[in-house]
Image (cartoon, rainbow, N blue to C red; front, side, top):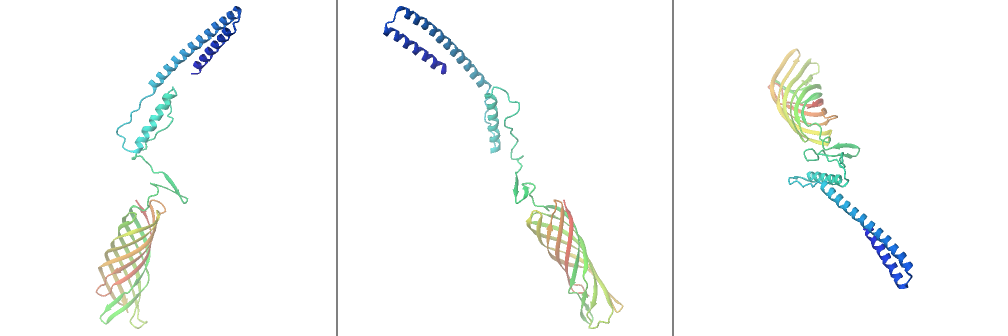
Length: 316
């Protein structure tokens, strides 16, 4: 375009000079000089026109070459989601950039990763100084667990049914231990509990303190329990539950050297609540209060046990 305008300007200048010469009627010598100048302008104009033609031919060839080298990327018909559409558009832009530069790009200008829904990994978020993500932020304690425990208990309401009437037996505090096997989810859990308890009998209320008395009570029970969790965080929750089962109980004492003993397998049930803490994905601590009721026997009434237990176990 610039060469074309230059040629037009030179032509107009030549016409204007010729016009001035004819108007003024200058001598033949000056006309001869103008004729020489006219020939020089003709040569310059011819040279410019030839250069313009050559440049025009080269531009046409370049445009044809670039058009041939730019690949045509057809949009696939099976784009199932927005991730596939984005991937297709990025690949198309990359191919066009490669064609416009006239050289092959060895390393992609835009690296397109596989971001399909199956391979999509949720990003990481920063919330109040704690880094969690879609995977790492899952509630801990989910899965099968094995949980040994130990504790202390305080028994209440035991009476001896004798021929002369019912007499209150005072009991000392004792200890307990056991094992829980179960499965827990975020809000629910179920397990089987096997436990043992033992305590000494302190005195029997016969109205006299000079009577010799000693004895013990022990038992082993199994209970199926279930309940629900109230999570406070991904590592800490409150548990509430109940269980049904049976307890083999053995009570024996000596009153003034006379032995009295009874053992039986009895129906029992329990209610409990506790706090659970998960310092890691597999380690579990627990502190639980458990109320256990053991049904009555022929010689002894039913009894209540209030247990405080500490557990440490493993979550699979």
